Length: 196
Image (cartoon, rainbow, N blue to C red; front, side, top):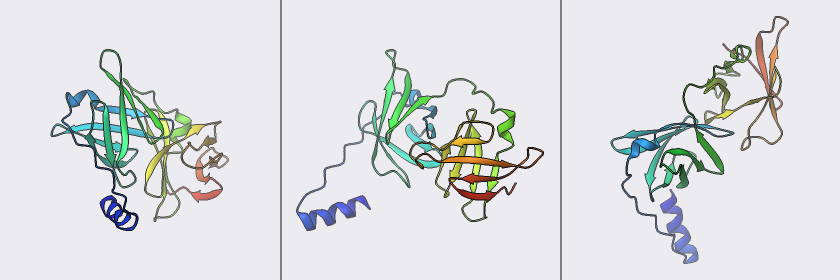
């Protein structure tokens, strides 16, 4: 799709698209593998056949190296997005940046999700495009529009802030009955009933 757009712009405006950076071999690809988190998303980097692959908050992605720590990432929602790894003085990969988000490596066992928030896990809304609340690395995430898992930040026992990159100054409010059971969610002003 990007190539076709480039050709159309070149035909219309006479401006040639910039050349794609050459793909290079990755030295020691295993050092890049692992779990990462940003303020808004989780990520998993793996090595398959000597090449890096990624899962960015539920979106499978292709990754190709264009420099020692510089990569290009493509998925359904990323198009040749720059991904730059950060390394310690010893060469250990500590994190990366992608799309304005700084991801840090998740080390060791993550803390368990507090029991109170486990009641919020599940699916909300209709069969078609439900909201799905899950946990990863001891944090709550919500998947919307069948796209990605967005990290929720608890404010109190019922309210979570939505992350940067989603809605500005919006919240998810978990609705409970008299026994404290979660029966729904007010997600940025939209009410969804819990399905399971």
